[in-house]
Image 1 (cartoon, one colour):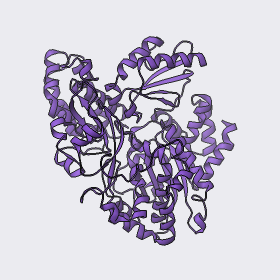
Image 2 (cartoon, chains in turn red, purple; image 1 turned 135 degrees about the horizontal axis):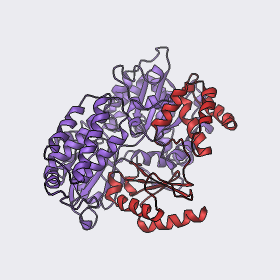
Image 3 (spheres, chains in turn yellow, blue; image 1 turned 180 degrees about the vertical axis):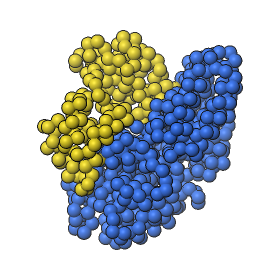
Image 4 (tube, chains in turn blue, red; image 1 turned 45 degrees about the vertical axis):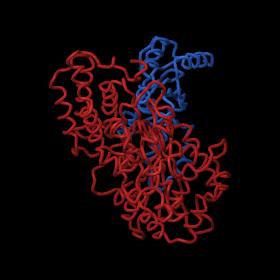
Length: 157
Length: 432
């Protein structure tokens, strides 16, 4: 985490004085972008850097669904399965992905390339069903488009 | 377009979100006017006179919220734009963030001037990627052009905007949960009183407004409260962004003038239902509002009074059009799974009640439902009502009771026959 401190200092400058506690979420997000998950050593370093109680960071990590304590696959596929997406075929899409990848939602392929997840409403109902690949939205998905996407992601490695 | 437009007034192009294009559309003129010609309290008076309603779901008048903040009380005030758009069916703030980020920034500057705010925040849901990048780029443009920072436009006024990204929690869309999250903690909602305008972020007076609510401020200051009141109805001035999805021919975001006929909106502006579908019912304002059948919704006009009289609410403007042949038992199952997943766990009635509702609906869908299960769903829904810190417990109850009241026979059928009346189908008529 040490190499991110210069970046964190810039972030801190944008906040009013006394807002150190507010830096927990943005710092955790940035650490996870780098490492793919948040390790014990990251928590130690953040406790020291921000001066917040360790339990605050542990609580944040266990509360917010986007934060992870363990590594996942190279490509994180999150399919929304809330009301509109399910009405537009998300359940068939999830079944298809599960069959194609040979893993259930929540699991990672043995080669570490894909992690399959389900998500609740991603705010993209007008272009349902929506699939998130890492940070990017893929909208108005169909089984054919998912197959093309898997092929492309596999080729990118 | 469904009536007069106040926000979606320009063609979306590859550059329409940039500062140059925004300034060419007279952008930042309203802020300049406020800063150089109006006193802070005059701005709040104008917003109150406009009758602008909150567009996050509760429709609380924005001016009344602002009026609670005392100017010159020798303490910092904060402003937070709520961009944690997460109510299922809602995707309208995303339109503003992606296409008109400077409209939000200008409006936040005017609000910050009116409320004596030095530090303003935008709390944006963690999954939003393009909306975040568009807004972040716009904030940087605004700093470079001297609209943000110290001595803005050569005056004593100074203001900073920080974009704060959430991390996947529905409850953070609730204003006090949002503030807990900005404090770097779990997004737990807080008991009121004290109101957030008295004790909000770090216990300082804080105004939390929805993105769309705030985005109307620039127009109100530019054209005046009277002009704003000429749009919409007497009790519901202005417009509301509607995000419509589901089995509808042309899903998307529409700006609808209050008072506009619903039948015309659904069947002309949105192009009616998808080919082969007929309208069964509609979720009018996010899944936490009660469903209205086709016969109930078609005669309505688009305004709060009309939807409240019909026993529902316009909520966040997240409409979902549901076609005949859709299984309402499965639909409620999807909703209850969501609420169970998102309960923050602070309040016993919600933490236990959501799981309980979810287990009952799963049991019915598994063909193991009992006749008394329907009464249990009603009873647990009522147990939540008003018994929790935030409105989520109530919301899940509304969704449940709304569907049970109107589609009870589908539940009775599944319990009796151990199967769905519509093959468990959520995709509607063509897949029945």
